[in-house]
Length: 240
Image (tube, one colour):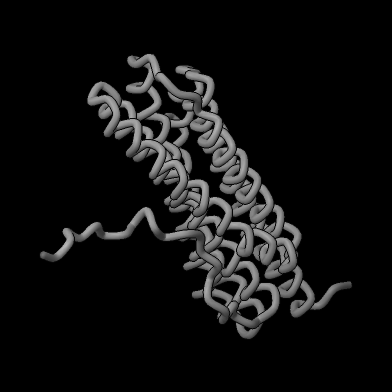
């Protein structure tokens, strides 16, 4: 017959497993939401846009549920060492997932405005960006579920490519706006969409850093790889 101590250990382990399941489920929701918002932009899918926006309250509710679960776990179990690291890290991960959901909803809302315009250019670059963002998000959610710090490191390193695409899109869209004033409104919305996707990539990288720390116990101290920052350069008038 199992002792009280064995029952406590088993119950505690079940709670840790439950926490991982809750976060994985939230990650799946967010992954689906991002896929819908990307589909809405690239394929002008109004139904996907509606679905992405409708999922946002569910993501928020999942974050609240996890927060309450973590608070209860900390209060009742008083975890230490690796368990404490995992539990505290879960709060950071859910915060990043919630922000990703917000950005996905923003992209979906702007996609509806774009449907009012006939775009005089292709969305090939943006489509490539959406593919990379979705892949990084999937990989980092898998990394969390599997406790795989190598996968987390893969996402951390690949964010630079997303930054480079964003900066290239920024310059391209500004050029279109300068060439024809009629492009200003749709290009402005595309700029915001591209920026939201870039931020989704950043939050996926945040999650990767947290997963790496939670798994290895060591923070990623190296500077985060970043792409070309020329899109943010301030153009100063020439001096006389």
